[in-house]
Image 1 (tube, rainbow, N blue to C red):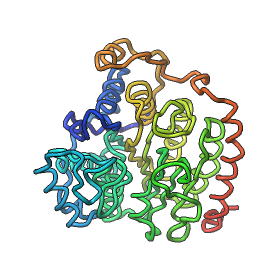
Image 2: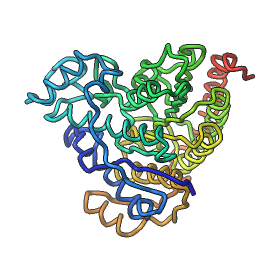
Image 3: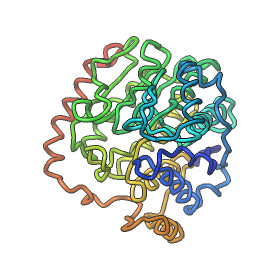
Image 4: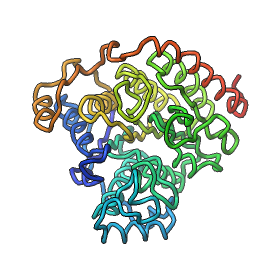
Length: 385
């Protein structure tokens, strides 16, 4: 059991809400917290819930251009039409404007900063901010449902607080482009992103050739229909060796679960079995290489009832060092159904949740080729074969 674990949560984090027609629905995070509570994780003696405080203007400016923050504040205060084109990446397409957008986004960033501070100060070993992981926001524009880039802000704060090497591993189905861009020329931060190839999916980046400063930008561009076995093989060949070679003082992970076989916005074919595998690997790396220091944030995931709460509760259980009963607690099922859920599965997926196992086998060669391309691009920088 991990000695000291924090979950950063406040119901106000659900105010990060682009509206009822938008796929990024805050209820998914609320249901995650409620499922963790139903399993008793939040009542464990080694787990504490911490209330976040909003990121300050100065903290936001560590990553974002002051003029962009000015624009977000103004739009936040005056927005009348969600899909009007306000500029700065806000208003059209992925990022409709909403009243209170600045305050909600600053609170999400503040939640990741709260977690970073808790780990840095030694108050806890592991922290999870399930509302975070907004990894697409750029210095001067919103992108991909993300207004402020909370992982990048937390990492920059940790650098300024004295950390000399930070490893950031992103397992969202979409390339972690905002975090990569923030630290692309900074050899103190290794960014590793495993994602569906930009040939097929937003944001169209994240190829092995994007190697950054001395090979510290690492990208595994996976083919559609990459399944559990192939994904775990790629993860195990890339992530542990590179993190071991880099030897960070803290591990930061973005835990997007839109890699799931049933996710409506992407084309990978994972099940919750892989999330359990990845969680255990991160836990091991944090203790072996970073003194136990592990800051985890949420990310994408658009099966809001059947996948996101299960995936992130599996991660929360791993942080806390406990095993979960496969049967989901009845009291949580009642809550989820009251909010619109139907057909809720067991905690660990049956492999048959994947509808096209034949296509997964076809993708295996492509996954191995993607892994090999990443190794050729960056392993030599780190003395790895």
